[in-house]
Length: 211
Image (tube, rainbow, N blue to C red; front, side):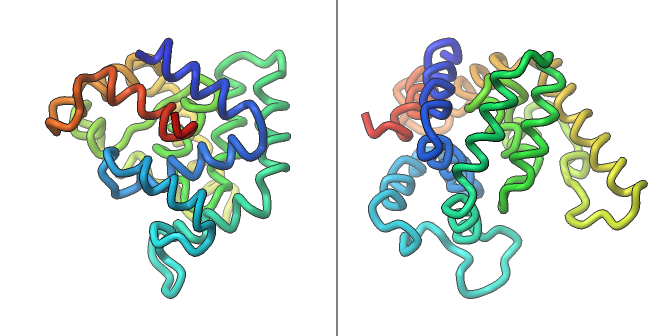
């Protein structure tokens, strides 16, 4: 599944700044949402832009503001694309690439460790997403996935860096491809609307392309 759909997502995301922006948007739209409905939400954002009803968090200061993420991407997508592609095209090893990409995606409003890892997985075939399902499946303490939002000391910055590296190592130990495939298999059992695990995997790509 990942070898087909994950790789197709990477090709799409690396194709242009616009494609990368929509890939990150799909990730943010999936936060606290059923994966079944994310394609419809992304299509609405494509059509309505900043006025989409799925970009909530405009009129208050919630923990997550999808409207803020959209605004960030609109203003920074070309720089983001250039930075991401420079790392992907570099001769660095996977661990170094993963850390640099995580740092970039963690600067995007709305992305924490799991969703920044999801971005690395979709865009570069690295890291992975320890979402609520995987946290439960693997018995992971959610506290280990939280970064300080504003570290004010060198010690705080170092602690965040350590958590990022530990997160990357954890995902790579489980295997980026394995995390994708087993998540799709697990999710396919949660709704009769999924034909099978391959269907769950495939929509990662079809949500992005509208195919």
